[in-house]
Structures are given as structure tokens and as C-alpha cells.
Image (cartoon, rainbow, N blue to C red):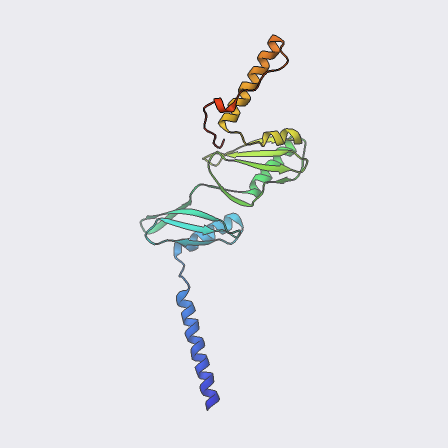
Length: 204
């Protein structure tokens, strides 16, 4: 009898613990499940979404730990949602660049870095080419892209330098000075002082 009582007590404790665990697990809303399913299919990876009370915003957590902010709005009985910003996958960019390289007669492998990334419109993504060159992909607000391929390694390194507006103007003035020097027969032209340009540095 004593053993049976102990077993019954243990079962009761286990049941209480299980119930407590179920109560602490947050219930998933239909919109959270819908976002999980749609983004999981889009990225080919598990996505876990959490929405917040009293705020029209959700957060989709990706396998690498990064998060995507999701805007959510109620439209009658249905919910509408969209990712805030642009999201690209390296799979798509790499496939596009491989096609471009094949058209150029220089087929090779491509590495565009993180598989999933959130970017702002106009951001430039740099991809490495197996031959030492680089591919540069700029994503516009409407999701369309422009591509630049630089096959020569030294030129690719120079192109990957992040230029500020001040640096761009400095290079332009230096180039103009060299052109003038060539016209007048001078050997050297002093580069301009970037500190005199009066342009605040910022991302390109």
C-alpha cells in the first residue's frame, strides 16, 4: 500500500508538471502560423513567428537567430502581413550571377554570403567569384536588381571599396586634375584635401 501511494503521488506530481508546462507554452495564433508556413516555404527553413499584443508588428525568427520585422493589419475577418524591408536569399543571387557569368563566357562558382538577409532598398550586395573577381548586386525598392561583374581580381578589390560622397568627389577632382596636368604637360597633380570638401561622410 505504501508503494502504491508513492507511485500515485509521483503520477500526480508528473501530471501537475505537465499541465503547468502546457499552460506556460504560448498558444500560436492563426496569423503566426500563416507567416511561419509562408516564410518557411519561401526560405526552405523553419521560421518561428511571434506577434505582440497591442502592436501591429510581429517578428519572424530565422534559424541563424536573426529576426525579420513583420507588419500586420486586420482586413475584415482576415489578416494581411508583409516583411518590413526587402529580403533576399543568396541562392537566388548566386543563380542569377552564374547565368551572367556563363553569358560572359566565364562560368564559375559564386558565393554571396549569408543565405538569408534583410536589406534596405538600394543596398549593394557583394559576392565573391571563384576566379578572384566579384559580382555586385543592387536591389531596388520594387525588388528588381542591377548587376555588375568584375572578373579581374585587382579591379574587383578596388571596386569593392566603400566610397563616401566625400571620397567620390575627391576621386572626381583628382581625375580632373590629372586630365588638366596631361593637357599642360605637368608631371604631377596634388590630390585635393578631403577635409576641404564640406561633405559629411555617409554610406554610399
